[in-house]
Amino acid sequence: MSEATQASAPGTAPTENERTWGMLAHLAALAGLLIPGGGLVIGLNALGPFLVSVAKGDQSDFVAAQAKEALNFNISVALAAIVCLVLWLVFIGILLGVALFITWLVMTLIAAIKASEGVAYRYPISLRLVK
Image (cartoon, rainbow, N blue to C red; front, side, top):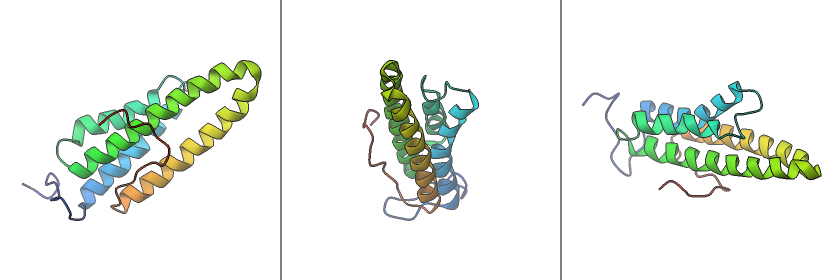
């Protein structure tokens, strides 16, 4: 196996390629921002991590774990965004939506930085729907 496709053994540090794909698993969620107003609400932010999982998850345990973590977090955020939409009718949803967006953005960037350092990051607030 070449270094680019070789997965690191359990207990060893991830390769540079694995760290890059782990980081992309988290940053791919930002692709949902390309659709104005719709990225968080309809769950497009979960599409990027899912595609990374499908593309590289079987080649590396580190990439698979980071993609699943990003996918779980972004599904959780999409569900919270739906709640914020419902609460928008009583105006509290506006404030909660802004807080959710800021939290999502900051936590996604922190996770991407940690993954690029080779740290298996787990979001502190996330439903573990995908195992």
